Each structure stands twice: as structure tokens, then as C-alpha cells.
Image (cartoon, one colour):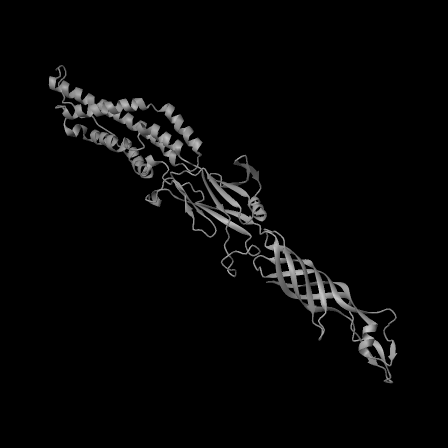
Length: 465
């Protein structure tokens, strides 16, 4: 229970905040205090398995993008609420369609007043001519108000399209919309619309006018009534557009417990001592409304369409066993004493069997402590024993040192350190070249020499078990 408690408290919470406008990252450690997590700015963290990673993406316009978080070992999760503004499900379609028509309608909104029949100088206009002239003046007024309505709609449209901006923050977009609100008099637009609705009926019922007199004006009026005023680009919907945008979430957060991608040589379960030195979380920005063809996407901003968050991983410290081949070195050399008969054959002489050798190979087994590390080289402490190869005798060596293990090749490591190597030395009273008569060489060797452990050093290759 105590160990479990330590494990829980050792888990840390980190927040990575990505700003899409500036393409920058900020890092925070989340400290639990009084029921809430408080953010403390830090440098880029080195994380451990089991840590909670929260990814926050800010300044992402939900009308333009939905997000997809690609986590290690996962295929990704689409941003919830991609259609956050429920009242504007087709907003992209409207902005890519109607906005272009407003410009063409306004530029093509021309009307030439039909001619009034000429009459001679000094002659009074006939009653029919006067009525015809009044009807044409009505058409002129209708044309003037209709042009004014399209001019206001064009001005509104340029600002309404800001809802699709990917280069402004939410507050900046709202400020521009609010500034337009102070300039745009929706009441006047509504009055003009009521005037046009009533006036078109009178024009169509006027016997002094023919359809050819007003057919172009009628087409523009019908477009204003049936197409424009039913879309989000109508000044009539300005307040609704502003309120819906205020409700939009430009900030998204995702949390995940750190996971690892297993190495190709490892089992399905990840070994903390092995391969992972970093993990990547990829944020993809997808079209919020895939039905809009990419070539018609008028909101392209040239910014990155994906971003990878790269976090270093620190493997925790721990113990492991290894075996390997070591070269054990003693500067004074390994002594190998023996006896040889003298030339007369009645005595033996204490000698060395060849010159002292300074090194020998040994088969070692080590208990290793692997230090926590986020680098590709993992430092180790080694303590172990090695058995040398020397005829029938297998001298023992005690090893104490350190080493390095390679994260990309977790089964292989290098080690070196000090050693205490089994060796022989002469007892007091015995010297080289001493002669002995009436001898038993086995008993005499036990009397003349003793086993000791001589300090030296070692180096070699470890293979992790």
C-alpha cells in the first residue's frame, strides 16, 4: 500500500500549450492545490511513463478547423464539436457562394430609365405622359434604395467573413465585428427592406410600366429577398452572428497518460529500461466542413496544417542483471609460481612459470543499477564477479565500476572500473630461486604461496539478461 501511494504521488501533470497563430509552445507543470490544478511555467519538461500530458491548442477557429491529436500508439481523436456553431452548419458554403454573388449583383445593378415620349416646345404634357413620368420616378427611387441595400450588404459581408479568419484571435474578430456594429445601422436596412417589399408590389401593379421597365430591378430584388436575407451574410443576422461567434470555443484541451511505442525487438509490453527517449504528439488541423472543395477554400492562410509536440522521456532508474566478457588488468601482473628440479635432481627450486602476465579475459556477471535518463546513453553502476580462464584453475575476480547502456541497443553495454583479482604471492621466509631438498611439491607450494586479491582494473562488454 505504501509503494502504491508513492507511485500515485510520483505521477506528474504537465500542460503543453500550442498557439497556432504564432506557431509556438509553452510548458507548464500542473500542481494540485486546494482541489484545483495550478499552472506553473517551466522549461520543456522531461517526462516519465505514467505522467499525465495535457495538450491545449489556442487560437484555432472552429469554423475553419477541427483538430486531430495523433498520440503514440493511437490513431488520433477528432476534435469534439467540430460544428460548434450550430446555427452556421453551412456557413462555409454560404460565404463561398453568396459572397461572390453580392459583388456581381452590386456591379451589375444598373438601370437605364426608359424614355418618355417627346412633345413639342410649348405643348403641355399629356396626363398619360405625366403618369408615366411619375412611375419612372418611382422606379428611380426603388433603384436607389435597392443599390443602397446592396452597398450596406457588401460592407457587412467584408466584415462578416472575418469569422473565418485564421490570422486573428477570437477577441480581435469580435472587436472588428463590434466596430462594424457601431457603423452599421440595421434599423435603416430593415426600413429599406420594408420599403422595397411594398414598393415592388406597386410597381408590378402600375399600368404605366411594362415588365421590361423593371425586370432587371426585380431580379436583383428577388435575390436580395430570397438569397441574401436568408443567409448569415445579411445585416439582419448581424446580432445572431456576433452572439454565435462569442459562444465558439477557440481553445481545445486533451489529456492522455503517457504511452510508448514498443521497440521492434521487444515484447508487446514496454520495458522501462530499453528504448524510448522521446514521444511525439501530432496536432492535425482538418477542414471543419469537408464538403467544401479545397480549391474553393477561401480561408487558406499559409500556416502549418499540422504541428508535432516533441517531448523527451526519462526512463526511471532500476536494477538489471548482465553477463559479458571482461579484460581484467593487474599492473604488477598475475603471478604463477612453480618448482623445477635442479640439475643434480636431488632438490627443487622455487621459480615463476613464465613472465607475469598483466591481463586476462574473464566471464563476468554483474548486478547493474541503471540511472534515470532521457538521453540515448543510460549510465550504470556495476557490481559483479568474473571467472578467469587459466587452465584448470578458474581464478575469481571482484568487479566494481560503471558503464553505459545504449537505448537504441538496450541489450548491449560497456563497463569499466576497478577490480580485485585473485593472485598469488610468496609467504614470508620464501624467495624466488630458493632450493628445497626432501620435498613434496604439493605441500611445499601450500607453504610457500598464498592466495591474495590484487587491485587492478577492468573493461569489457555487457549483455543485459
